[in-house]
Length: 457
Image (cartoon, rainbow, N blue to C red; front, side, top):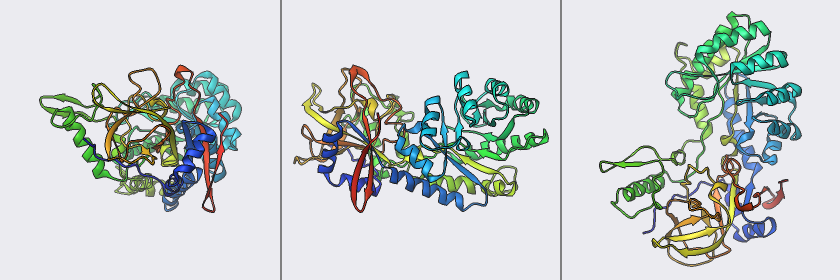
């Protein structure tokens, strides 16, 4: 059976680059395979779209690029040149930010921090988004002059989080700030969801904390809503649904199996039905980050007379801070690898072996639910294949689901994984079997010509 297609959404600039397969082959010959390609001009376009939404409001704002989303020095330098700030979560990310041109007043350190990172932040004089009471107490001793934000968690209706100061402990945090005379910039949260209702409730709780801080003589002026804005992976929502339906039918034995072995992608089968949510749910999103942000700012804030969040911020002279990562690199990176060989497995499946591992393009517990793009001159009928990696591990199937290809590739053909810039390139890339780190190369378009610039490994 040929599976339904789930085509990847591509930025026009990336599509123009891929339109010439020989250009892609030349890149692989010159820089090696596999290869990560990043497109800073797409990053800039994403930034402009978010700024357009924020500029329509009457409040001040700060965008902090979440560096952890990608190690690329090109993205960091692009953000610095654009005049925005940066969110870092380690000493090396802080060093990268400084090397990329950010000054201390444009750097925010987030996430859980040990004593070494707190000392590094204190020495650099950057803003610290405090994760817990211990951090706050240590900063009071190390550098009470540092500006801080309080990251809050424990909101009603939100999933438990290991990050942030629980709402029940906020009074203790505010009391400590008063005693130490630390400068409280504002209150922050970061939810692992893009659900507008959940986020606006969290914003309401944080605004209440700001009021309590003022009652203690503190003067916070910032509401930091973190990141969590979504990406758009596929151009065809109906195709996604059709594939999901075929996958479910295969799991039930009511159609050809789309899965390899015992893979169930987060689903479980019981009483003749498929239950649960898939690990690839993010690929179903069809709403852009700017539209999600605009909806959030227009949402009525509970307890404020029906006024929208954006209006409440403006009326109270509060600045909005955001820490987008995925939204800024959406469609701004691809990963390319060569086909090494094609074989028939004992179960009858066709395996297309690539010179990369699954961990190079997705986290181990997830699944890529957009189709890789095969650049081939071979002619054959559309068919279903599994892409396999180069590690000597059974689990190293790049796709544990059967993927539609319009023509069966041959050794040497490039295969493109779209939209890998957000975490996929760096979060879980493996060095097993002494395979080298994957090179990262920036692609710029000038006068309809493309130039490639390698980054330091």
